[in-house]
Length: 347
Image (tube, rainbow, N blue to C red; front, top):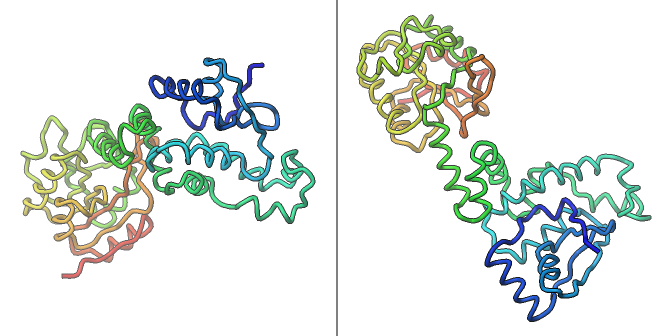
């Protein structure tokens, strides 16, 4: 009979090409050494590749049935991780396939009716409670796949914004940190129009009394900022004069961000300013900006920038900071403390 595949069998990818041919050759020469695992409903939960190889080589498959105890996802993952050579990024990518299943298991753990599920038989509730571990599904996925929760979050973001790069991580062609570094550049390129939510520019106006200039803007962006004067890409703000009360959210790509920051620091006519940038404290441009700032707000979470309709859409892959240059540090702290922790500079 043809066996059906349980959804948990899809957590790990099917073997292809030479890898699958090698498995077939091994099974044809030595037989099936490791049995194929079945769910109690008869579907395959582990061993799709071995089952396919047996069918194609006409080797009689051997089966074992899972006893239904504990987490099915954890069981299948544990069976695969000891056989597959996967780096931490690959394990995090694979965990995303399991995440909805782990979330479903977590919901089941919260339901009293869960303890009547057939896999638990006649076990009394007190015996099951230690077995059904509590915890956030993302953290559980990280634990089950022997990776860390941050990698799981990064893999999820990568799958959303760069699915082809995500597949490369799953295949082991690129590491997850390398992939995330690449999409940091892609998402901070300045090629897309991202607009600052008005609550941040409104706070800047409270602190400074208004915004005279936004040197890195567009016609649409200024509908949200409301600066008296602004420079567009066509104006090339880097060659213009900067002065007065400035709001700046520069393009985040290199070398543009460093050039805008250098221009800012070299503009003595600026009287007061609020500058919104990624909190890249390890970079040279940020270190120079911090040296001259009189206060800073490290924004809680990540700012959801607006699309052209004014709806939150684009979220950077790291946190943001708002740097203040001026004498009204108390006013800055008061206006921006609702967005995150504020600090005063000491020199």
